[in-house]
Length: 240
Image (cartoon, rainbow, N blue to C red):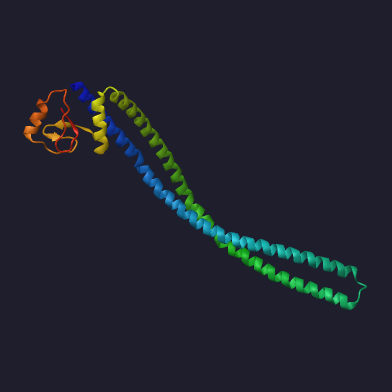
């Protein structure tokens, strides 16, 4: 080991720390939090819209069915009236029967037309409510689109930084002695991403604890070919 090896190890550690911070920043973008809230609002509005559309669909189906029944009655009534016109020489009894049937059909048609009108009128407040929902949703949708664009932009910028940092990290790590690299990777995995730390004064910059003066003197007196570790946290300690 040489002083250069430990200097490079700190560079690798700094890059690992940077990569972790960038990944965390990417995951916890402020724009993403705002986007999540707005998407929840849109989802709630969509739920309201679905209920209203379901109610409207029932009324529209009822109206369509009533229109079909009215059309059938009109067709039947028209056919009977044609028969009556063609059967002027028929018996009075037959004509009265056909006239009575036309009267009943017209009465039924009037009832169906009243029901159809009710179905049409009942759709009006639903249409108004759907219009109001659309007006509420429009600005939220605009904000969601803008925030999504911001998230994509921010992620793209962070990804570029991650690519640069990862490439630099790979280049520096490749020049570390294999034994030092293996030990560092093991410690980094076990100690939440930090396998090496600086000794700044009497303090380990990894665990932020103070070392005794005797321990510091021992570390500073150690030859460059030996790996020393913090007796508090176990990280590789590099005097600076």
